[in-house]
Length: 430
Image: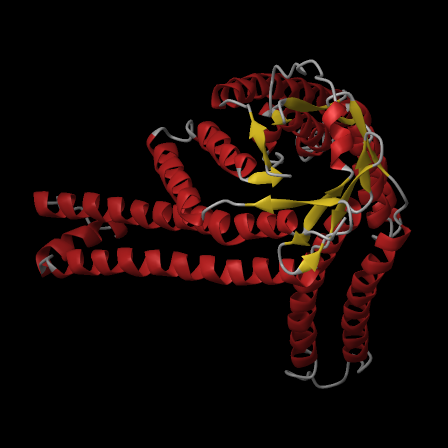
């Protein structure tokens, strides 16, 4: 059998079926812009239907052996799930606040103590919500008519994640790649395509090697900052202060450290995704392979962020010009009357022209904020999310895909709250 080709010039191994992404940018722009406008009009309610339409777009354009994925989720499910989650979260926070307040008043007699704990007690819900979100997403995904699924285990996953967070803190961050791999394997080993189980083989050793470079860079930056501060303090209390002796090196270190951390973090995120994809399999020897290039993914995020910034700047300039044109038509007396609002000592009565100008100005300021927000969301989807996903898909392949054709249908997983907790905590899946 001859080699097939993966997009980007990378040959797929013999017997591998390449994945492909065929989505058109224009269609995605229409979905996002329309969805954002309707979300604005409906005061946020339409965002559940917008998310569903975006997923339909991505899923139907991801093809495995010329067979597209299918997304069967509905916006109404997400909306009802969100309402259910908000209801239970409200009860949860009420009970926690009541218990903490009672404990404070009875034992500590300090009403302000533990005020931060209601936020802390939400922490275990974050991994719980992420797992539930992943479970819903897989249960609404099909390929060749066979649905994916994820076994129950959200509480166990949350407990595991909390233990790993403690380990990461105690190890000064060195345990992070082992946590990433272990938590991903926890989910992968509970994932199914029909009746065929997924698995994540290998270990995090190779991933740690890539992470260690980032960790050493951060350690170097922290060390240089500590040395700079120690050198300044070593001058002694009687030494004359130096204005630039500390400011310049610290500024230099902070700047390049920040830039390096951004690039390094994005590079590691891409490397981690590729690393885990290459160790994922399911059924009888069906292997997922990835030739994604981490630096290409870094470039997508950086360039996409710059393009998104240009779009937002353009929106700000256009609305700013409109505001300037409107201001040019206002006479001096009207502008003077508007100034009354900002001077508490003045009591003059505003005229009708001033009221009209205030209303229009408020509307334009609102349009400026909403315009920039909508432009940012649309640009991020178009310039970052889409090309990032497209690169991951176009550089991936599946070996022995024909062995998956025998998969039998699995029952529909029940997800009463859908992604409600993830939406409420803003930690949802894709």
